[in-house]
Amino acid sequence: MNVFVFLGPAGSGKGTQAQYLKNEHMFYHLSTGDMLRDEVASKSKLGLRLKEVIDSGNLVTDDIILDIISSNISKIVNDSHYEGIVFDGFPRTIAQANGFKSILDNYKLNVDQTFLFDLSLEASLDRISGRRIDPRNNTVYHILSNPAPDDVKKHLILRDDDQPEKVSHRYKLYQEQTAPLIDYYTDSLTKINCELSIQDIYAQFDQHIKLFQQKV
Ligand code: ADP
Image (tube, rainbow, N blue to C red; front, side, top):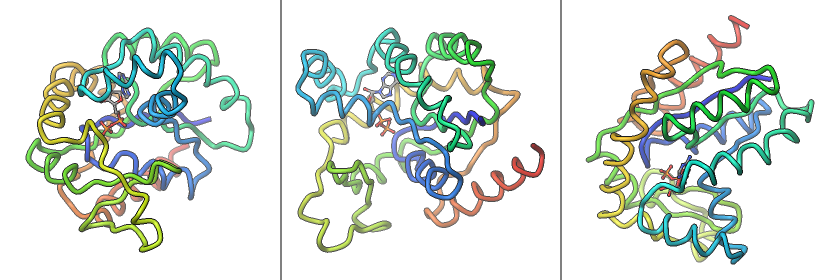
């Protein structure tokens, strides 16, 4: 079971490339953002609390995130039809990375590859302002670079936390709390330049995946 971690600011294309690993390489796509949004949609007590935090662009507490990961990981690890798990948007703090290490130790796993999806604040703002989500299945589109099919368009939404001032705040938190993970995962890190088109990012990423597969 290969364990991949995707680091990168909002709009860097982590989710899009994770979808590729899911569809082409039998990876389980674990997005903490999607899991949290599902909890919000369920209108549970926890969901209502989470909605406030997420909509304000802040990070959910490490305890809640680590709880979500530890209660979901065993059924994925024990499902032999997955080649790996891609963690998209987790860990996001050093405390989460330390907790993650302990969780993985229980399964004798470790992080095999960390991909850094690199993007400037300007590009992040640009991307997110055009991002639209289909909330029925969390598929991500972009009004210019990746438009939705006509029959899907009426379902699309702009996430509350995708308003420009929230995106700047999230970028600041990314730099303060998540960027230190670049050093933490330095031994397994591969950097992907994300100031390119989806196809060019995909080509770079695909090349790294093929290299990784040759090594193992
Ligand atoms: P993006 O990829 O656009 O940054 P996500 O869908 O990954 O967005 O996350 C949306 C929001 O969910 C974050 O801004 C944060 O509030 C919360 N969140 C997701 N993952 C984590 C995490 N690992 N730790 C803390 N908060 C998280």
